[in-house]
Every structure is written in structure tokens, then in C-alpha cells.
Length: 212
Image (cartoon, rainbow, N blue to C red; front, top):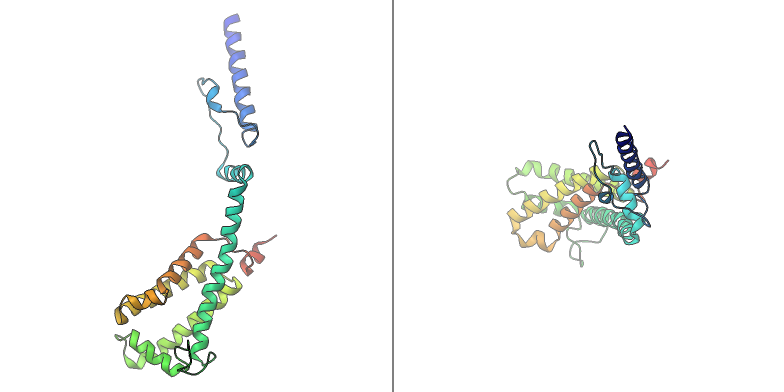
């Protein structure tokens, strides 16, 4: 009986040591290894949940916090770059950047943009080209505003990536691969998909709505 009682006290002491290690596991200054405690039948190794591990990694490594902050705020630049690019292209179609022939003016009026739409979408009937041009213009306007303001950002970024992918595909079929590469359409499409995948958008309406 004395031997059995001694074994019970030993098991109880080991369990207390493991529990104490679990309580202090999130501390950076003192993180005892659970491997140094002997195992015994029914031993359960406690691990913190993923959120706790992420908080501990941020607290223990300041560079992780800096990199995470930089990644969060880089989405602001990406939103503005994509959104302003959409709105700039729309403004060109209505002559806000000047008439056709001036430097860096692609169309200058909507009629030239319809002609350009027909050049890219050579497989579409002529009667549908004005409607297609207006649909593209409306989509770019809505996506541009949504990205700049940060409204339904993830959905807007995903749809922007799909729209830009379609632009890149039609430009490749009509003009060759060099045209979308020179216009950075593939890069913009990839950036939109990255933005959609990230999911955290500071300085946006979405973030303001979610804030307590």
C-alpha cells in the first residue's frame, strides 16, 4: 500500500508540473519544454490554440509584428492603385484626360473606346459592341469606387481580378501576348486576387463597420 501511495503521489506531482508548464507556456521569458517531463499512461500534452500561438509569436518577435503591420497597410496602396487605374481608364473614355492625340490619351471619347472594344472582341457581333463597352465601363467604375472606399472590398477585388483576367485574355487573342504584358494587365489581375485573398483592409468602410 505504501508503494502504491508513493506512485500516486509521483503521478500527481508530474501532472501538476505539466499543468504548470502549460500555464507558463505563452511566456517568452520562460518556456519550459514539456518533453523533459516523463510520460505516464493517460498523459495529454497541452498545446495552445492557433490564435494563442500567433499572439505569442507576435509578442516574442517584434519583427513579426512589423511585417504584419506592413502587410496590412500595403493593402491600402493596392486598393488605391487598382481603383484609381480603373477610374483613370474610364475618365479617358469621356475625354477628361484630353482629346485623342494628346500624350498618354488612349481614346479621348467613347466612340473610339467602342471601336477598341470591337478590336479586342472581334468574335462579338457588331450590334453588341456598344452594350459590351458600357458594361465594361460600368463594371470598372463600380469596382474602382468600391476598392478606393473599401466597400465590399473582398468581393470587389475578386471581381476585379476576373475582369482584368478577361481583359488580358482578349488582348492576348487580338493583339498578342506583348500587349497585356506591356500594359501590366496580368500584374494588376494578380494584385487584385492577392487583395481578395488577404481579407484585412485597414482605412476602409469595411473595417469601420466591423470596428466595435
